[in-house]
Length: 168
Image (cartoon, rainbow, N blue to C red; front, side, top):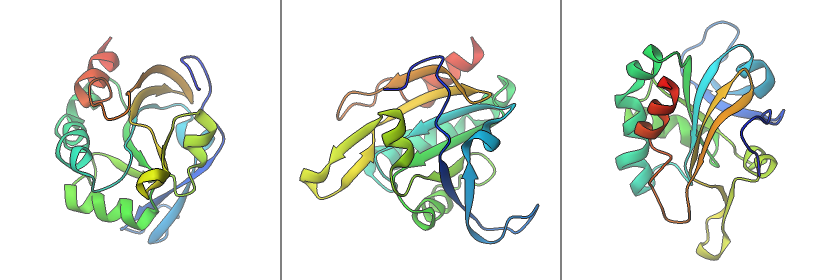
């Protein structure tokens, strides 16, 4: 499993872009991690899936509500990652009004989750391989803090814990 001090894997994730600009076309666009993380501080958190009850009621809303505080603490961007496709992540972001506050990043084939060892096997529940619920502060592509939840838990990966770590 990835740990503090490690560099994030050089995988390409996807993001649904609704407004064309800066060379981005509408629809799914690649997010190449080494390039996207270079020189930035990112508060990255992952959820088992978009539109799930805990993720929609607590996890994502906490980050959206505190987006300005993260910026004030030196965080350049907040990313929400899930093993869903870019269309689903885009729809969830619209539903939750995340635009301009939290980037909704799709790990459609679980490449990031597998490469970091942060997987959650929900095959027995018909949901396949997912990302474990976690949060991390990433500085210039390296993991500065890492908070991994136990199965079925929501205790350390929320916005309050991550914001306190960003301010430290």
